[in-house]
Image (cartoon, rainbow, N blue to C red; front, side, top):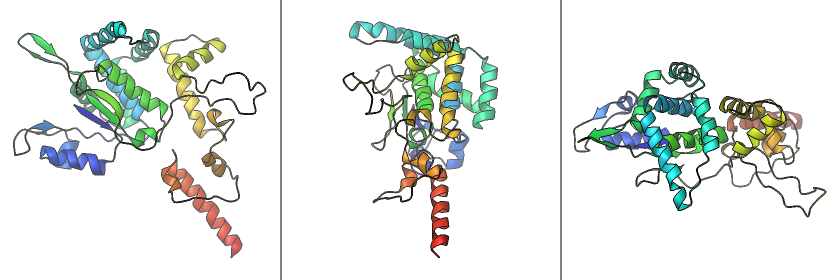
Length: 309
């Protein structure tokens, strides 16, 4: 299986559909091509509401966890046994993840995900089957080999939450098991986003001789913050904390992660700046909120032009 998340449908969907010998409409309906010169194959094109990729990935993961527990246990035991080769499996963080998946029934997961993402429950279950449903033959069980690639729709949006939701899905489904044909990564060689909550301290820190921590992993940061607030550290509280943390992007002038070094986008949104220099680049394609930035720049440019005229 090859799972492509938030790539350009104009490129990937048409190319894969052509390879399988089916139409785009058939791909959206999950049509199987069993004959023809191109051979057989299966393609499922899922249209998700913008910004809800994390919810979809978590719902698929919950379906896999509830429906195929033997598959999940097989790969988790595989990761743990890899410690003999120097691999470290963070069991505490995994337990938080499972606490979150089991905080709701499967019916609740599917119903809520359908409402949030716009993807029907049966399609979510179909995605889970494609990724994790094992095959059996001659009394043997054969686990799916899945490659998950994500691209700019994820990297340039919520960033941390969808990327880590996809990574967790990859863990329990065996995409990160190290087997040939498996993996999880970006698909091409474009811009990258960092998935951490806090920036380094400002360079004008009073104690310049002290080494600086350049980032704090969220799986460390969130429990620390919950403990400091006197809250119980569990999967549900961690997820709620992370969601609230990233909702700050849309509710404050300068988000916490930019408190020492605000990015240009937020300053422009807020009316700061008198001159914007752009050299051989399209700034609307270099931000997580291109539409918002474009409307703001166009409006400010129009006001300036009216003043000049």
